[in-house]
Length: 232
Image 1 (cartoon, rainbow, N blue to C red):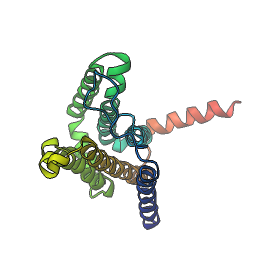
Image 2 (cartoon, rainbow, N blue to C red):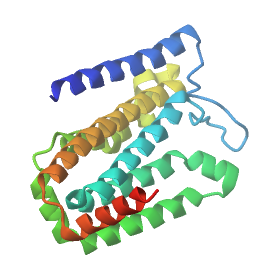
Image 3 (spheres, one colour):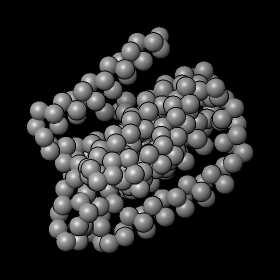
Image 4 (cartoon, rainbow, N blue to C red):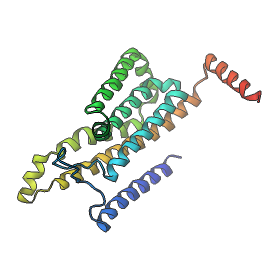
């Protein structure tokens, strides 16, 4: 049954939001949304915030789930692999401050370029299989949630998080932390929608894989693996 999962999603998102908001209310400044680390970053950063730490964890879980789909649900591999690559690219993007500050400046840009190059090349190579895989799984609640998360992350956050907007709204009372708080919280909910969408997509891909006949080559691999395990 699907509806108990959605109740669980609601409770989990509500609990996470409550913890983060109450943490800041009980201990002002604990979310560390505006931290000045030195002359190199005079405008402050939110990279040390618990919200910024949760975001790459969510992307990492999405990537692992999509890797599982690509491994064990062959018919959905053409979709799972590119979306997993995008999750990896966003994970690198969320770690840009650490990569720049502790390793090599602009390293994250190189890593993202490499990841996206592989995604684009793979997508072009299997473009026909992508259409087949998409037809098998659509309509899909997981893909719909991915779309909703993408609207928030790519569009809503970028437009509502503009510094000029908040300077216009608050005037002389403008504080950078206000803009950062709104931007990071909305970005977090966008990633949470991606996580829920990935979980639902994984359930659906698994169901499709169990309905489909197992190819002969895959049956032989499973038999060899079973025989090797049975010897010990």
